[in-house]
Structures are given as C-alpha cells and as structure tokens.
Amino acid sequence: MNTWIKLFFSLMTVFFSTLSFAQDKAKPEMADGLKANGMIYVVVIVLLIVFAGIIIYLISIDRKLNRIEKELKK
Amino acid sequence: MKKNWWKILAVILLVYTITMGFIGEVPAMFILRETIRNLYFHVTMWFAMQTLIIISLVFGVRYLMIQGKVDRGLDADGTLKLKATKFDIISKEAVNVSLVFGAVGLLTGAVWAKSTWGTYWAVEDPKLNGAALGFLMYLIYNVLRSSIKDEDKKARIAAVFNMFAFMMFMVFVNVVPRMQDSLHPGNGGNPGFSAYDLDSNLRAVFYPAVLGWILLSIWILQIRIRLQKIIRIKEYNEYLD
Image 1 (cartoon, rainbow over the protein chains, first blue to last red):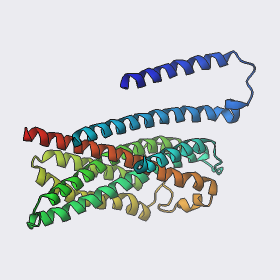
Image 2 (image 1 turned 90 degrees about the vertical axis):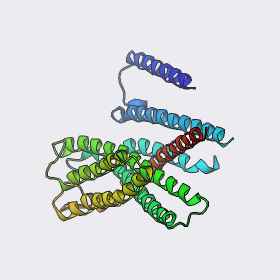
Image 3 (image 1 turned 135 degrees about the vertical axis):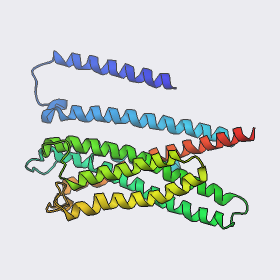
Image 4 (image 1 turned 30 degrees about the vertical axis):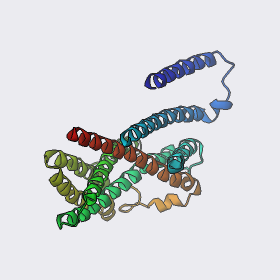
C-alpha cells in the first residue's frame, strides 16, 4: 500500500515537471488560462495537490486503524 | 461512511478555503495588501488550537470527576476506571495535537509579521508573548506527564495542571492583549475583526475556513486517540499473556 502511494506521487512529480517544460516553448505569454491574474491559479493548484496528498495520507492512516481495530475485536 | 460525514465536510470546506482563499476578492488595505488572505490560514490555526485545548480541559475535568467517583468506591465493575482512562487519553492527545497547530500558528504569524510589522517577533506585542507563554504552558504539560511514572498520579496531576495551563493561556492570549497596546487587531487601540467582518467577501471564506481547520484538527485528534487505545489494548493483552 505504502509503496504504491510513493510510486504514485513520484510519477505525478515527473508528470508535472515534464508538463511545465513543455509549456516553456509555447506561444508568447498571455494572461489566459492558468496564467490569468499573475498565475495565482498555479499556486492554488499546487496547494490543492499538497492538500490532497495530506488528506490521502490521513485517510490511509484512518483505514489502517480501522483494520487493526477490527482485528483487535476478534 | 455515515459516521465520517464530518471528515468529508472538513475536506470540502478546506478545498473551498484554499481555492477561494487565493482567488476570492479581498478588501484593499494599506500595509496588509494581499497578506490579509493569511486570515484564512494563520488565524484559523489558533481557532483550531483553542478548540483543542477546550476539548482537553473538558476531558481533563471529566477525568477528575470520574476518578473522584472511583476513589469513593463507586466503581463496582471497573467500567468507571476504564472511562476515566479514556478521558485521560483524550485530554492528553488533544494537547499534543493543539501543540502542532500552535507551532504552525506561531511560525505563520512570524512570517506574516515580518512583511507587515517589519519583524519576525514584535517583542512589544503582548499577544505574541502571551501566545508563546501559553504554548510553553502546554509544552510543560507534556514534560510534567513524562516526569511521573505512576499512571494514576500522572493523570491526576496532569488534569489539574491542564486547568491551570488553560487559564493561563486564556489570560495571556485573550485578556491581557486587550488591556494593552497590541499590534493584533481587536486588541489595545486597534480595530477588531469587526472591521474586517464588515467585508462579506472575507467572512464568506473565513467562517468556513475556521470550521474546516477545526474539523481537520479533530480528525487528527481522533486518529491519535484510536492509536493510543490500540496501544493500551495491546499492552493489556501482553500483560495477560
């Protein structure tokens, strides 16, 4: 379980880093899409990913505890 | 799933907070500028922290009440003692989680202070020093606990010290700063949050943010309590073996 989570996040990191390289060669910078409003949306997405990571981690701990609690009840 | 609805609510509220906290409209103010958005992230840490120490106080007092009954010999089948142990665990773990939120609150406050007040630690600000003192009180709570070996004595003394620490925290953080000049809003000669509350944009994110962070902190607290219970049961089983 843990190794899968680690693998998932490392793959995501690679994916997003290649994504940002690809954008460097794009057309002149315009304030559209994620670049609108001084690119604050990029920060929002980064923070949401960080938050998602923390929540997924919390949920996995929660589930692990559920399993152990069930085993102890037996 | 039915019992965990509040965890889902916490996640929804915090996703809303993070998104709207950055792209939502905020009032234009001098000095503060965009840092007013820290209201959703720094101030809420202290709301979560204070909720946790209230929980800790309540369960500390309940521990003493139940333990008093046990002492008077009203505990025939041992259920009261079990309950008392449970309350003690909740009280202790609430302090532990509150320390995490308090530490984050102090650090984020320092960063915010650097950009608006010009220094990481405004020594003359009673709220800062009060928060540091209150934080230390709860660190001492943990030191006190770890210094007593007898479980029963540890829980009793910790519960009484908890009341003392809570009172000190409230006086230092919520009373003294209001009687002196403080840089924090709502204290000394400064306008309170009521000045910001007039702005419905801030309110629309701030209140959900407070609730979201409080729920998240309680989620972490619940995980820690369950872990402690498992540890106790395991120790008990080993003791039986």
